[in-house]
Length: 233
Image 1 (spheres, rainbow, N blue to C red):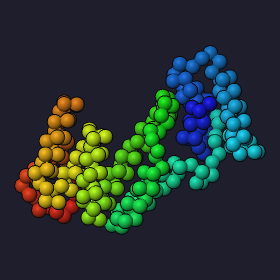
Image 2 (image 1 turned 135 degrees about the vertical axis):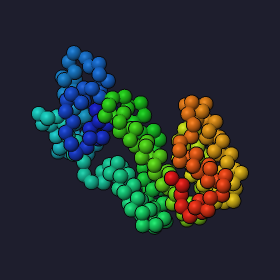
Image 3 (image 1 turned 120 degrees about the vertical axis):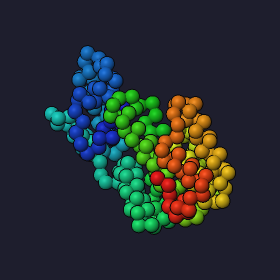
């Protein structure tokens, strides 16, 4: 029943057909009476939602096309997560870095632990979990940009070292750390970060750092004055 509820929540506001639910619940290897089992799970879920406050039993809508979960705006953290990201980007583009940081931090606070841990086996939930994690990492990158723009370099350095330890293959974190260290007059350390990235990527993937990271490395070696003006790309 948990997987059924999770699938309907991810698709809240639109119909999920029975074939999608069967694929999600049994990972492509359904039992003989899968359609009947779906009906049973939906019935159990309705009873659970009634006990949780859906007194009129209208949370789940049934149609020939499938099932739809009715939710109101603001009922799901997902809606707030998307809205915080949207506002954060708008503030960032307007160079309103305090506002941007506040919104990105609000978005990050809504992601508590691994999304759908143990449930994301099917295509719908698996894709959703991957999307949330990518958005979370992008939020972290944007929050680092906002902090750096506010001159909070010492705070950013510590944060980025931790992020690199958790995500050693994400080159954007190396790039951000190299630039912040360089702008803090720690050129030697910035170059050491590049060598670390190079070693890790060679060891784990058999690859060299991406083009933007190599360009930043070269710019730091030559003390390119443009590094003091804008983020390397």
